[in-house]
Length: 112
Image (cartoon, rainbow, N blue to C red; front, side, top):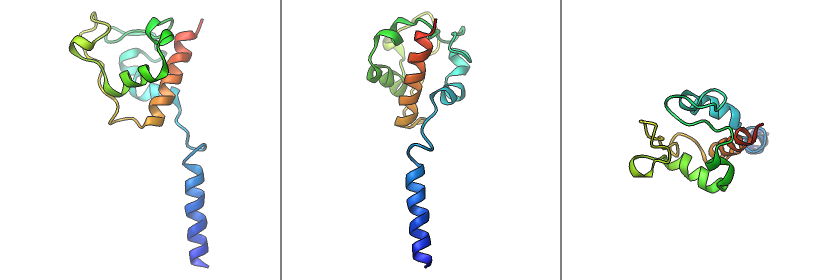
């Protein structure tokens, strides 16, 4: 009986790691990105805005995800007017978190 309960608990844990705990792009953005990019992605003196941002609007999701994952510094920086580099988030955020943040960035960029 104890083994059956243990198997049931493991099965529930596996089931909930998917959709029930899906990454929330807006929450992750607010926790990890808003300090530099602004609470609503409006930009700050440290980092660019995302509303109507050409890079976000025109780039494929995997290109944006690579930027979030690897960051940009030195000659790789796209926005040279900002003194700080885009820090790599690949060790901080999971692949699902990054995918959710990219979807959120696309939403911010397309907002009218």
